[in-house]
Image 1 (cartoon, one colour):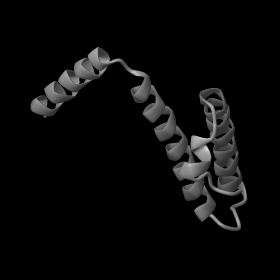
Image 2 (cartoon, one colour):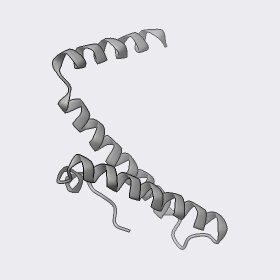
Image 3 (cartoon, rainbow, N blue to C red):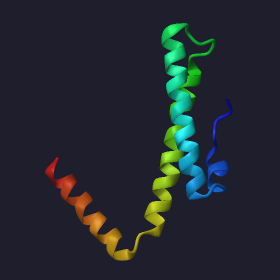
Image 4 (cartoon, rainbow, N blue to C red):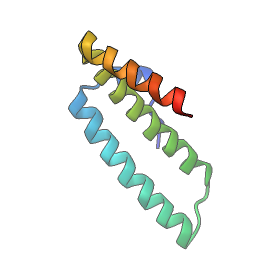
Length: 87
């Protein structure tokens, strides 16, 4: 399976990204099961799948942040600052 690169993901709509995320997560779970039962020819495919899932989630979150209003972003910054201080 080919990995999803950042530039490819930018062309997708949010709905397509969510569908791709679900499909990739399902494929990952199936690959994990296959690897546990009989082993994979190339176990590094699991790592690449995890990274694909992370890329898709990152793109979804990037778009969520881009849609936020300045007030929402300011509130988010305050929450993040509070968490940083409490560590």
